[in-house]
Image 1: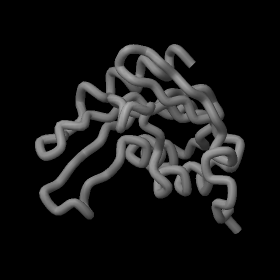
Image 2: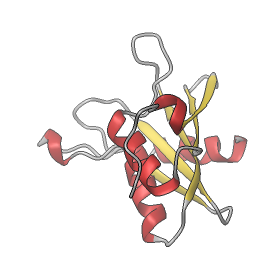
Image 3: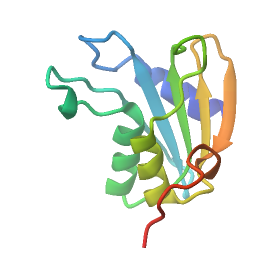
Image 4: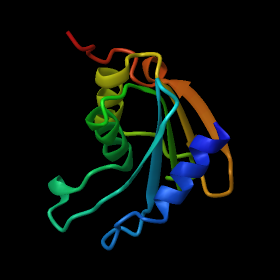
Length: 127
């Protein structure tokens, strides 16, 4: 996972966060082994913002790939490692399935790992 976290860390540097200052970077490892990055992109109209995880997941789908792992790097939230939101977990579930591995990290390098199924245990699966 070190290479995936490195890609997410690099993507975090390209986050567009003029409103919150909460830079987030993500990276997806695909079934073929490719790594696809994503960064948080904010907008003054909050509903138009896009989480780093979904940017990476959508780019993965656009590339004709399937996600098998997702890394997220962000500062801590209320003292805890920042995890993907429910919308991002649902997209990961839809595009990759319940076994997609999620690893989260803070800039200091502390990490935690879980699967989508563990983080979204009753998430609706794709048809």
